[in-house]
Length: 219
Length: 127
Length: 209
Image (cartoon, rainbow over all chains, first blue to last red):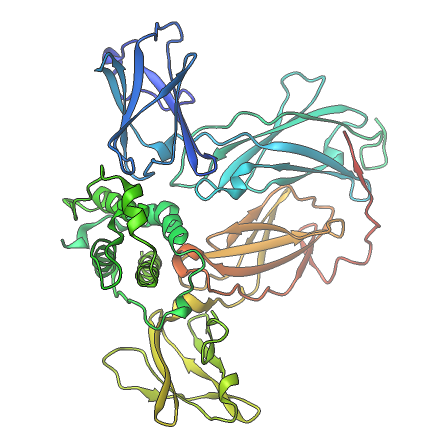
């Protein structure tokens, strides 16, 4: 199954310890895209191992990755964004393992940010807003955002809402009065051309609900 | 090449999400109403053959946008969606920067690429 | 779409929902002249005279044409026999879709699905806007069919709804016009209302942090 990142397409029998996962972030720095890969086995000795991508590139046939600790990354404008590429792990110029990858199908959006909650006494509700850098992008513009919120004392009792806009209303009568809440947001591509994985969570926002629960009763 | 057997849905997706952005980038600020003509295409194969012609063949005043980003991507989209399509060989390893300097964006090229945009738009609407 | 100011004839073209096309010209440089507009829809056809001129201060300032389909328009504007402007264009480039007709509402707990009749051609964006008396601005939800679900609503509140249609730029270009907004519709507890203003309280906002 999907391990959160695109996995090897080989049969299990051929899975060797060079298996790796990658994700792409488009227009992450102006027009520059970022492709990040790492070995699935974090204990692997990656000293002389290199990554190379070939195919579906503008002006060039192949590009080499840079390495930072255990991550290999490539920042470029040269992704064609149409068709498949091949990513290979190389040991002294020899291909140890290769995989077919389509850059637009392994997109990991940037995390949303600036989560805010405004309580509207007259309306008995809370307006949740947040921001995403993807609103200004050319390519990955359509995302689904998942808003998760919980009462701070209930460790794992997250309520979740999916939406495509960046504004949500929570009804006061649906929340506990006089309680501390935590709320956070993450995003995933939502267009049939660009696919991929959940972003990281946004920083959390914390808010306290008023004494009454919006129907005049207090708890 | 006969474009009848292409996967038009796949081509529309590549155009809508990728090629369109490049064409828009190239013709930024240019408006269709400022030109006195346009290139019409009747059905999907007709549209693709005219798109190929305007993309990869030079015209008076506009050598050939074949090495522009939208052209390289058009080639990739057709190769991925049309069985057996090879199209004109784009020499991918020529340095684009040198070529782009020579290929100043003349009015003729803007006009040609504006017509190209309208062909793609028409292909979208009928796909 | 409007031609650049300064060109001999400032031209504007509007394609009303592929039903009628309006070509208007502002001939500031040719005051007092009655132009002739001739047109055809196919290269092989003969030019025909404008069936329905638009007059301004008694002079011809435009032509209204019936159209049937998404296709080319070839026309020429003449001063007597002298052609001032000869042009061919894709009428889709200047599309203004019709405003969405009656909106239908299907409530299900805190969500409503708004539907309306499709306009019958592709690559359109149906925009539904909603708000309550507590909201300073409309909030938009968009979809490529006229079947739009809006979540997170409060069945107790009274909501304003309106809709319009836009032509998607990748398929029509950037010189189209959004449709006019539909009539505003009021809904509360899943039912139609005449208005939302009767029992509105004055909204108070508190930023919590």
